[in-house]
Image (tube, rainbow, N blue to C red; front, top):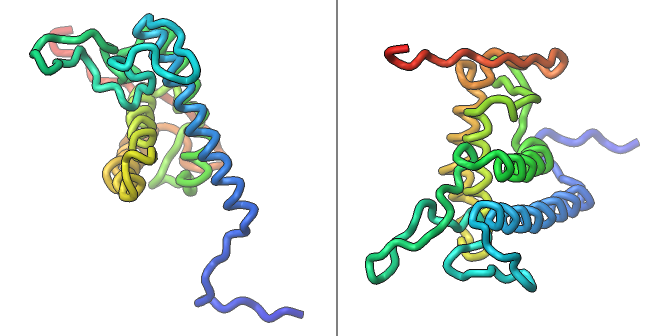
Length: 203
């Protein structure tokens, strides 16, 4: 009979689990870029790129690399570009495409790795796609992940993503008075309810 492990011994994650996680991350990066190219074509009405290259180098195919509204060039004139990469600013068709890609990332990478336990102090909602604030925050987190896990972000990119994006986003999303404050507080009792927003002044 083997001796029980001491509490001071490090926890060893099986190699096959690490391999699965690496494969999942690699697949999600590829899918994110493909979804980005699709979204760029929908929002910019650009021709379909050939051989994986952007149709127009002035309009990046990856939404994470787009800089937002019309950009200025060296001679001071404005260039046409995506109106916004923010998901709540997209039209219905582009929103659906982007939400599908975001959902894939949230369910296959974010929650398995960073989901943690659902408690009264850390609520979650399985229908998070119906909470506009959650969609907005998770989408911004995903865009930052695409940019900061790219090789061009350098070796500190992932650390920057954790510190500047992941931790603040999860604190806002999973606080008891956050967007999921009226939703699930126990994994065994799923619940979903949208909280009312303040009425605009003068209504």
